[in-house]
Image 1 (cartoon, rainbow, N blue to C red):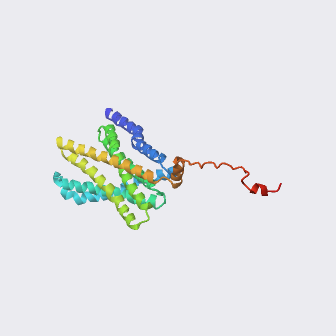
Image 2 (image 1 turned 90 degrees about the vertical axis):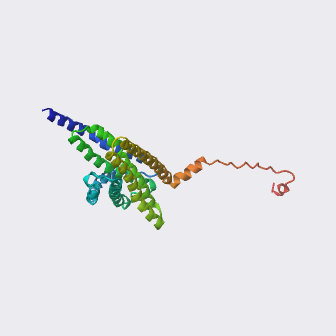
Image 3 (image 1 turned 45 degrees about the vertical axis):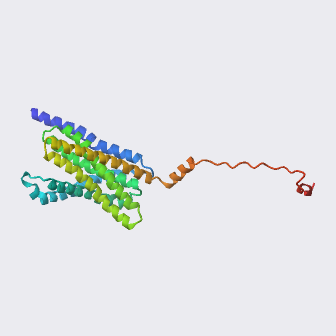
Length: 290
């Protein structure tokens, strides 16, 4: 009877808190980014659509990661987890997940004409990243609850670290996607397309490598890896905010820029020319008919 009551209580708590824990931070982040849009804001339906498409990106990512685990199984078997094997695993996870998100972002946002400016790329990159994080967190939180763990603490930890990280990976990816969309140089477009995959995948791999090494080690070594993970997260936040500010400044419409420059420029008033009255020295006065 007690176990049934506990399970029922856990289920009720999950039903009440999961929408807040999973959807709340993502919805607030996207609302703030949309509100800060310097130009014409995309429709709410478009942002919501890309966010929901982020759920679907988990399917090909899981398939690719399963193949990755099979390939690395000899190196990970027997409990011998070398830093090289864990680095390959972390980078492979980064490439799998970021590659899946990038394919869907290009397929459903760029090809549909939703990315019209650099800031649009950042906004939709964050949307698809947070969509992936939402469905990923749901699986982890339900797994922790079914295992009888302290699921609420685990949920808050997931909300504080991996979920924002996926959003920041989306900033990096969306910035590169926006650059590749707005540029007219084919060579530059190719560079930014590769950057849209590789740069967020490297950040993702670095994040996962620190987490895997911290989980492998114990004591002071684990604390050191967790500290390095904190440094990576802080650096990722700084880079993400910096890229958002650059995208915002680069996406201000030209008419607003011109209006702002006109409003702030000093007004030069030409001096009034005094009106001259005819005098006796002006002979044309005597030539006028009377």
